[in-house]
Structure formats: C-alpha cells, structure tokens
Length: 195
Image (cartoon, rainbow, N blue to C red; front, top):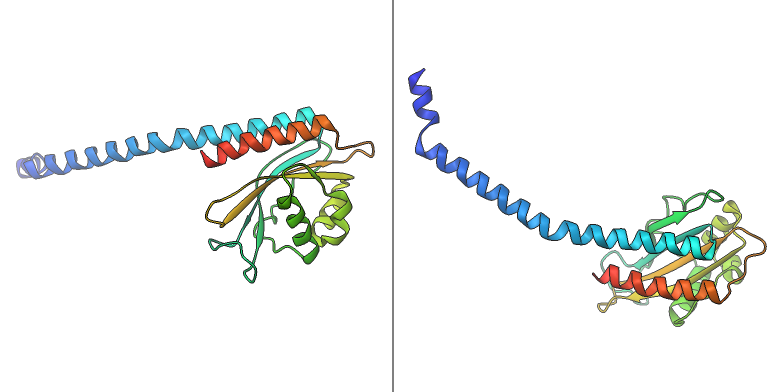
C-alpha cells in the first residue's frame, strides 16, 4: 500500500496534474474570449428578426446565405441557398429544414440577381412563379407576399446574405414602414454577422 501511495505522490504525477490544470485553464480562457461575442451576435440577430416580425406584422422572417461550399460565387460554379436564422408567427410553419444547400432553379437565380442588384427592398411575390422551389414553399405555407433585401456580400466573394420577410395576409402591402424596418434590420444584421 505504501508503494502505491509513494507512486501517486511522486513529483512526476504532480507535474502532470499541474500541466493538465494549466492546459484546462488556457482552453477555458480561450473559450471565454470567443463564445460570449458569438452569443451576443446571435442574440442580436434574433432580437432584430423578432423586431422585424413585430413591426412589419410579418408571418415569417429569415436570413439566407448564398454560398458555393467554400468557393467563390462565380458563373460556372454551383450556387447554393441555405437558411441560417428564422422567426415565425403562429400563422405559418418555419421554413423546412431542407433549406440547406438548395440549388436554385433558373427562376430563383433571376430573383436572387434582382435582390442583389438592388440596395432596397424587393417584392418577391411577382417572381415566385418562375422560382419553382420558392413557389412550392409559398403555396404550401399560404404566403401571399414576400419581400427581400440584401444584407451583404463578403469581400472574398464566397458568401452573400439576404433578409426575407413573408406575409400570409391578402391585405399585405410592402409599405414605407416595412421598407424602413427591413433596411434597418439589414444594417444591424450586417454588423452582427461581420462581428
């Protein structure tokens, strides 16, 4: 028994224990630097999305990302659309989880081009009939009107983000209040995403 006690109290084990404790402290310290910033960014994004939902009386608000799985968004390369964040009311279901790496149809490409060619809010309801995947989702969820605004495109041309707002009401109209709320939200979300 005394040999085991002597072995466990040896300087080597004390050193090894101290080394592991120092490593754990270093890892914990590094996490403390990054995690709170990320959590604040996510909190900001959801706060902004919920504010847009409330102010605009929308039924669903979401942020989408255009990407090429790490490559640049250029002609001749595949383009994907993925939903990143979303909030919704009781009147509608959330976007399906299958909105991850969706390859847009030709009609959806045209709509995305229109969104990113603009610096303002774009109504999307008129263009939905040409964008098969979007049309199917709008029909399933009874969306009468949608609007989108670009958030930003990364400097390295690998990603681009846009804010989308959906309305189920027949009386929905994209008015100044909605346009202002979406412009303000796009700016705040841009800051949070660039963090």
